[in-house]
Image (cartoon, rainbow, N blue to C red):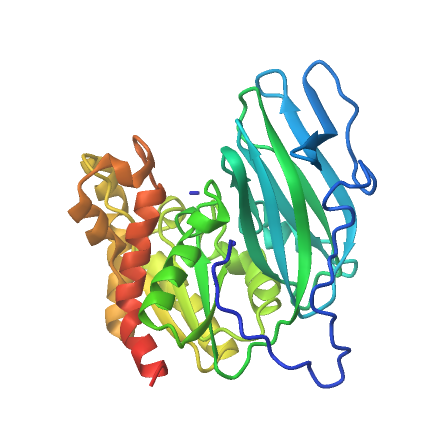
Length: 379
């Protein structure tokens, strides 16, 4: 089954022994396209696509145009240099009659496996919604310990003919990524229902949850990190070493971990085995982040689909049981979807993945589970 990280960031002081970064430095070259196609790998136009720098409202922009159904249209900038343990903000401003797409792909010269295990196609990639006027999406990215470079892809999403204009793209340095003592780091770990990679960064559950936390606890400094990945199951996180490299190796501190698996696990092993693997993950988080508070979440109820609900019932129950046994807060997503009783909360008909309204329901369920923890921390 299948990060705008809307976060309040409190930047920590430079780490002892580390050279302080110059906040505001941009790793992207010619991100406003004033120098034409300089620094970008732009394919030659053909009968299927055309990518070119054009004039747009008195400034420059790159037009990504698909002429034929299913054609690829995109540009790439390679060799963006990354500093270790540094926060960056990726931002893209554009408009168009077709959806665009942005993907930031971090790499490590010392670890060729990192890009694959990080799963950038889910974690740091997103569609850019069609818009008649300029719209901006952004993502807060922690370089962690592994990556020392990245490449950046801009393109068209979907398959239909159309155009998207990118007028500005930047990867701006914010400062060291070590969280401040009074900053709360909330990590989301799970599958496609957690990451919803088919939605823009601003519509994902980390962004929506952050809006609720900021409204209820305006003085609380938080950072949301969405580490979910499409198609992942709980044991795969360890079998592939993604936990080691993309979670523990990238995040210096996690204060609250929200764990939501089960959908893909149902096709890999029994509900009993799923519960055991979920426990292994919780044990690893508590070992690596001793002060972490863990929140578990079940999955969506599927409206008018009894067969689907029966297929996943034992797995959602396994999460509820583990939460009860270990006294973890439970985000009951299932009940929220069941109460809504509407196909409008899903990505599409006969697709249990949450759409924009469904993600809002997930954020409501998560906030309800987190609220007692946040109240205790805000005193």
